[in-house]
Length: 485
Image 1 (cartoon, rainbow, N blue to C red):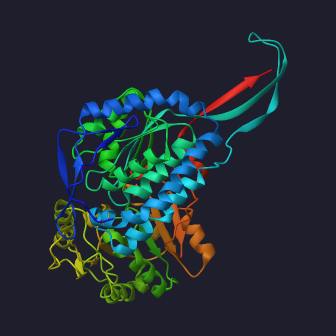
Image 2 (tube, helix red, strand yellow; image 1 turned 45 degrees about the horizontal axis):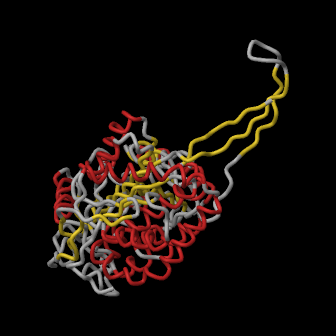
Image 3 (cartoon, rainbow, N blue to C red; image 1 turned 120 degrees about the horizontal axis):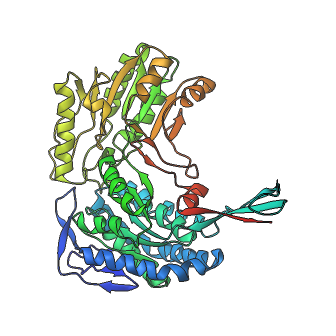
């Protein structure tokens, strides 16, 4: 697909394409050039999309699981056909390297998330009959019950800028399979791929109102979805402060919530850890999507006996993390999403230096036209530092020492976040024992690869609820117990 900067993009509401009175520019963060102009949704557009989803709900949830699955399968088929043409545009608006754009932005992984829920697992459960004595409620007898799952209703999926398409697939696929209807509100920075998804939805023939897409640069439209009584659930991926605001405002109408928020991934290296293996694992995600990934092991908690070797190894490997034009095959680190975010990451790094951390590598601004941050390594860190406690969402790694497993666990848990942690030890049993003491929704042992069917979500300020696999279906459902004698 050749990028057509002048294409007129429209909202998708109730099966219709809706033109807006105003648009805003979408910027390629590597070149700072405009790649398109997204429609600016108003509060009324948000309310119209919520009303459309509400009107479509009864008909959609009455369909059988197989009938809903057929629509999802058709969408997956359409995506198989059209997504190869999306790569150039999605790469440009996200700033991802071409490899990431092809494999994780516009990818089989996104399509597979839809295919998994074409034939979802059955969550129904029958309980053993329970004897009941005669009482004021009725005669004696055996009480039977079955536990079923019902759709929550209208789901507003508010998605992040780092992996917009893959993330939204993980939200709406299980939501649709459970019988919910959806409104998608993508992040303002890179919504054009989601509008392409709306075109695929339209081509797949979903009933009007089942899937709606609105875009916008400000908070007013998504805030209207959070406030709307027609919206039953908010599924949000993004920062913890915004998640907390959604939690607060959604409480007025008892919104159901699924929130995957920030992270400050701790990677514990025990005294028997393989430094080479740990450093290689850190390096694979140090500059991955320019550090804009909430699961990254950015907080390395290294046994003191391995500390100097680890810092020197990370320093050495940083030289292989080439920063540059993300469309080139050998580039590993592209830009961050906006100029504002670049400035924030730079201020974050400087705060660590000001607090006494040693800048081992990085910190400089690459001499490139876009919003680039060099991979940065800070050593001599202490647990109280802002750079140790907060998420940079950029290519910044901090290292601090520990003197034993108990201290390492304490340091790892000394965080407001608990999304993804890592343990490296030559003793798998020891690593497992450490993992069981970490306040983290996910832990990887001697690797940084997640299991894509395992429940995903975080402790503490890292979110509420779990998705993926069968847990995704549970997240978008209400439990209903039916009793009889």
